[in-house]
Image 1: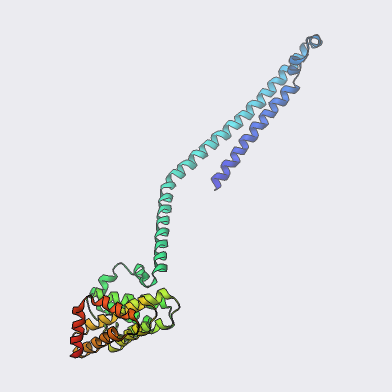
Image 2: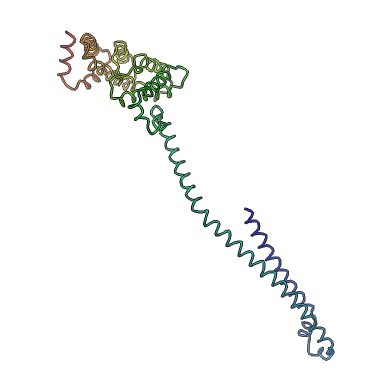
Length: 308
């Protein structure tokens, strides 16, 4: 910035001197006896003698010296201005590549962050993924203490009613992801208490989009529990939203298939499915269940299982 100010000052000085020199030349020529003599009529010429011409010649010489001095000063200022301009140009040529590269990286980083923010706003329960360290998956798989600590922290977030719903759902989603990373069907921290906490949260949620995402997580849980099965039955019977009904049906069918290791529990779930299919007051429930079963073979299997 100081170089720019200096350049401007020098430019102004050059222009001022140039105008000053021009004015001196113009003024002197206009008042000079030589100039007067040049423009006077022939009838006046005999009145001038040799002395007048000698004085005019002397004045003309003085003017030339002044003009020469002014031109010399202008030339010096122009030379200095050119030198400073070249110095500034060299400085810019050295700095420009680094500054340009820094600007490009800054714009790229800003754009990437904007995309991340947009993704988090659109799907907040999976926004946590962008904030994970690069070695997260490897540490979860190779460091049991780290995996346990992370999972414990996530469960505490899930159970914390004072946290925003989106943050609790994100914790539930991350906990489920940890379980899949470890290639397990169950995880100590991913229990019925955690699932119930999310399910209860949906009863008072005003954000319908988040509510549906929460129910999607619950319907796909690997946890098998009689209380969870009854929650799905209740949703099928009472929920006015058809999509939520379909999620509840998927959850109940998932409970049935995952309860194979417990014949009594599988029998109870089969009985619930048959009862809903045959006796539901809402015909949509039967249509949803029929669509999930696919064909009559599944219906026959449920009948056999319900009879023990």
